[in-house]
Length: 315
Image 1: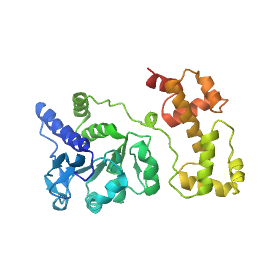
Image 2 (image 1 turned 90 degrees about the vertical axis):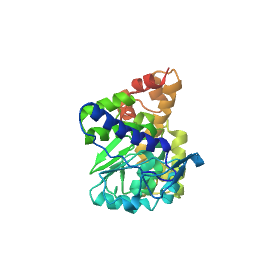
Image 3 (image 1 turned 90 degrees about the horizontal axis):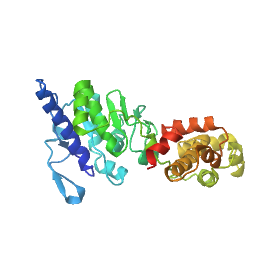
Image 4 (image 1 turned 120 degrees about the vertical axis):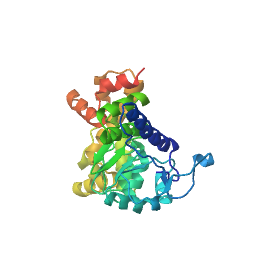
């Protein structure tokens, strides 16, 4: 789709992939599989601050049925981008109800979630917008560690360039593995990427008005290396343990234990990227005494062991 505030490359790259696949199929003596059309809400869409004007092949209201809708990623403030394209939401929902499949690229997930068809289903998006997504769409199960999701004819991709992985995934879905591999080789795409956890920078959700929880978050972020208990925090902010845990989870979308673990892991990641301390030293610095437990938590959150993470980001 061609929408206002869309990232131009996510539109052009999507069209390029499926058109190239048609060429690859023709080279193999097979019929083209895809009829690629750029569909918009208006006859012209201006992007890139006026530098580019796209004239869609069709207007959304004139398209009665299609097999696959690809919603591009957005630039700038994603909620504003969703709002200015809100007329697209009912069309997407109607198409899905009539049998179309829908794929969102990166922050395009906000548009698809706004349409309502993602409620109760899994979705991923750019990790930097995960807090906002969880806040505005609590009915969607966000799995922001994943590169690609596929559930009930709904697809999504993670941050920025990971949409390439979804595009190749869709090629395989609609053609076959051989064609997908040929396309991946042509566009030089790594088929093995399934997880974006190693790229995530944890930033606790603070866009809420629960003052005790905000203060608790600040305390955790300033004292993450210490032994912090739920009882201690609840008492510090004059709340019962049960009330504090409930309010913390509602406000931050993390349990207290998860929040503390993520802060410890984030601090470790920074030292692995730039420091020279051993894994044991870093473990102690962030308050762990059991190396096995530390490694398990680190791998669960980042998708990698501490050693592998250091190798990935250290020159």
